[in-house]
Length: 153
Image 1 (cartoon, rainbow, N blue to C red):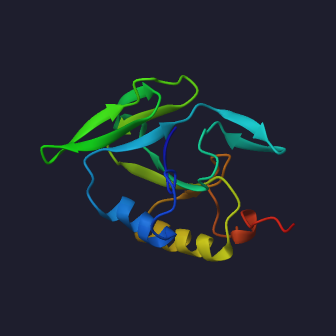
Image 2 (cartoon, rainbow, N blue to C red):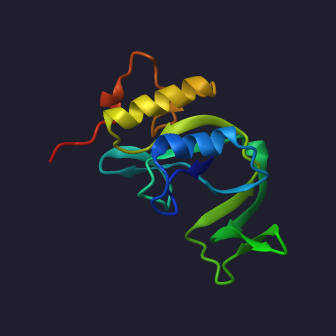
Image 3 (cartoon, rainbow, N blue to C red):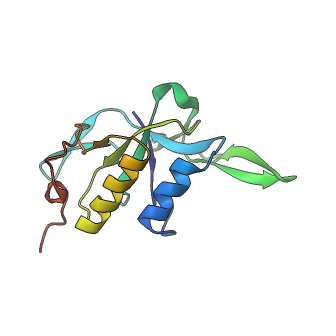
């Protein structure tokens, strides 16, 4: 599975704007995280993602993969063109990949608010994408935001 996590690089636009920017604008290539399997985290199954703080992402078709790196990858502007680059001190603990943004689902891997879930439902309907939970299961219409609500302390 390959996932482009929203908010993976820090805070920016709100959730709805971020989803719209990713889904509605034609991007040639983006960076994403290739994931391999599950692990147990706090008693729940979770994807083996090294980006813990991101709770919402977009799953890409496996065929969208351009190139996988052992370490970070990003683009920089040179002569008004985007050029792919990467960290010369590559880490084998974190993988990233260049992909064509061909999204097939929205994934929620952590606790989110009711408002965030409503936004995700609206955007999923607008772009005809299923919503998956952190186990890769499709969320049924009968499932409410309570499946992902923030735990009360």
